Image (cartoon, rainbow, N blue to C red):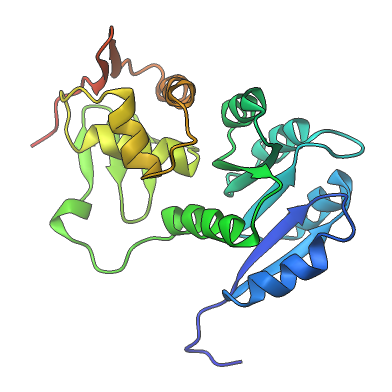
Length: 235
C-alpha cells in the first residue's frame, strides 16, 4: 500500500437485488470508491458495526424491514451519510427519508453516474477542508459554536449530532445572522441546480435542526419570507 495515497472511500449498498451490486461496484471503482453489498438489513447493520464504512445507500423496499426503519436504526448510533433509493415520483418517500435523517435520495431507476455524483457530494460535505480560510473560521454565538473545517457544532458545550444537510443549513444561517433566507435561497445553497428538490424538504430539515438546538431558540420563521438565525455573534 502506498502510504501517500489516500484511502478509498468505502460505500455500503443495502439492496436485495442480487444483480445490482456487482456491476455497480465495478462502476464505482472507476471513481476510486469501493462498493460493498448487503442483501438484507441485518447483514447491512452487522457490516456497519464492523466499521470502516463512509456512506450507506439504502433501498426503500427491503425484506426484514423497510429502508425507513433501517435508516432509523442506523441513525440511533451512527451519523454517517445516508443516500436513499426511492421509487420515482414518490415524494412522500423522500419526505419521510429526510425526516428520519437521510442526507439525500436518488429515484429509481437511476443512472449509475447520478448515484456516484450524489455519493461524492455527501462525502465532500463530510470531509474537512484543507487550509483554514477566514470564511472557514469558527463561528461563535452565545451558547453555540460552529467549526466549518472540522464540521462540528456545540450547543452549550455539548457536541451536536447533525447530518451533513443539517450542518450545511446551520452554517448557511450562521454566516449571515439576522439575514432572512427564503426556502428557494436555502434550496439553491444546499442542493445547487437540482430542480427535483422541493420546498417541503427545507421545512423538514429546519424542524429537525431546531429540535437538536433546543433549548436554544435561535432559528426564527418569518411568515411568507423564510428563516433566520436570531443569535448575536460573539466578538
